[in-house]
Image (tube, chains in turn blue, cyan, green):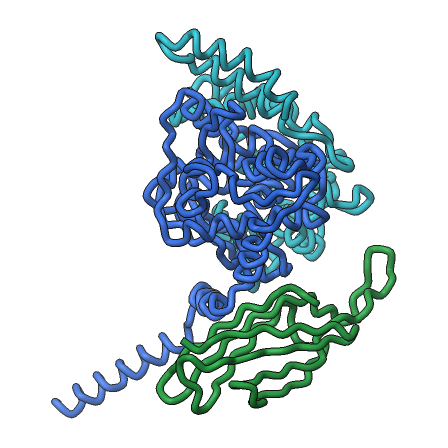
Amino acid sequence: MTQHRVLLAALLTACATGTVWAQKSTAEGIAEYRAMLADGNPSDLFEAKGEGLWQQKRGPKNASLEQCDLGKGPGVVKGAFVELPRYFADTQRVQDMESRLLTCMETLQGFNAAEIARTPFGRAEQVNMTALAAFVSAGSRGMKFNLPNNTVQEKTMYEVGKRVFFARSGTHDFSCASCHAEDNKRIRLQDLPNLTKNPGAGNGFGAWPAYRVSNGQMWGMQLRLNDCYRQQRFPYPLFGSDATIALGLYLGVNGKGGESIAPAIKR
Amino acid sequence: MHHTLRVLAPLFFLLLTSCASGPTSADLDKLAASIIKSSFRSEGPVGMDRLLQDDTNRECSAADVAGKPIDEKIAQAIEQANMKVMVWPSDGRFIGDWREGERIAQSGRGLTWTDDAAQANGGNCYNCHQIDKKEVSFGTIGPSLYNYGKLRGVTDPTSAAAKPIVEYTWGKIWNAKAYNACSNMPRVGHSGILTEAQVRHVVGLLLDPKSPVNE
Amino acid sequence: MGDPMRIRAQAAGSNATVRVLMAHEMETGQRKDAAGKTIPAWHITNVSATHNGKPVLSAEWGPAVAKNPFLQFTVKGAKAGDKIAVSWKDNKGDTRTDEATVT
């Protein structure tokens, strides 16, 4: 009897282990692949390039960006990313990282901001903008999101961001919420963070800028939102527009306390 | 940027002066609408008309912003309005070729600013649904449709017994909002995503007993 | 001269693990652009590494290596303070050398 029991137990264990072995889930496989990618993240290359651009004297005024105020005082990069978007008194606007870099490129270096905003992603000064974004975000690596959100402009833009997030339209009736307002959903095999609260908001917002392995491109939040809108069948969102900034503010505030891993690596 | 400032400065001022009580939700709705309008441009075949919201989208978006389920009466009105413009097959044939249906379900082409307007659109179905069990790359935004016809006891889709299910299936695909006011599902036929012929094939994919969906 | 490489060299026991990230398009020469024209090949053809000036690695690469290549190798007997230099050359004749100190 005991012998049977031992044999049965052994058989059951073997079967159980066998099943577990054979059934490494798709999700586990993808997680393994992502872990392998993380060592040797090409974002590092863009971060290094961005650091050079921050220090280099450029533009009609032949000046560096080292006096750029990203919200924590002129030249302060450390911790700036996790407090953006925020209100800036000099422009009287709530601004995200990329639109603020654009402001600095214009006021300090003499570049034409409107022209850069019109330039397609991946061309001319937009290439440098992406590298600068990677560099600035790296200055907050591992820090927690802590947007001030304490002025009337910021609080207003948060409400605007919420309305933009939930605005359904286009041929498919899609809003951001169609994909990003519920837990544990995915589109095809791509997990979708719930951006209305943590941990999804912090994870989602803190993962951009990121290097996308699938197309070998570095994407900032502006490009990420641009491509979302393209897939939602919306028209083209203007670079650094108030709708995109309001969305960033909405995500950043929802993600308060979440850890920034930018510049990250994505599929 | 300057243009946006000009538009927004007076609106912000308005909000600041109503600061004693704070901006109302209606004020914020107006501000958001104005910001959305000035934050986009047309690109390729995609125009600014994509930003226009019909009653369905406007009411459902407002309910989402409020964080409350949509009012019952408004939901019913939306469902009735969508049912009123339902389009049934012009030749009375509901069931098409499930093989074509699978191709259509797999394709996510169409209506973005990078899509070639001359090419046929896809239904994007696998983005949100499981359909054929063989396809592991499926989304979970919508319910699984595996065994759709089988689970509903449809053995002969042309029979009188199957008629209600067949019509419901067509209707759901053509205009999901006729059955569920604030559904996440696009109004695939109504909004011109798929043609009548394409919808017929997708219905076949779900209801043909020979379709792999029902094996 | 191409964009800078990122080199990390860490002492591990009696050896050092070197990780290199190279910035390069690595165009295979097999892709076609929107007009149907073949995009010309542009990729790294040779990689070499030295340890305190002494050659320790040499490689010949082709179009199979992906964009922004990641290379990892172990150098026997390398210790903290030693210099590791990595160089690449591509099919257009462009070259790049970067250096790192083993930590």
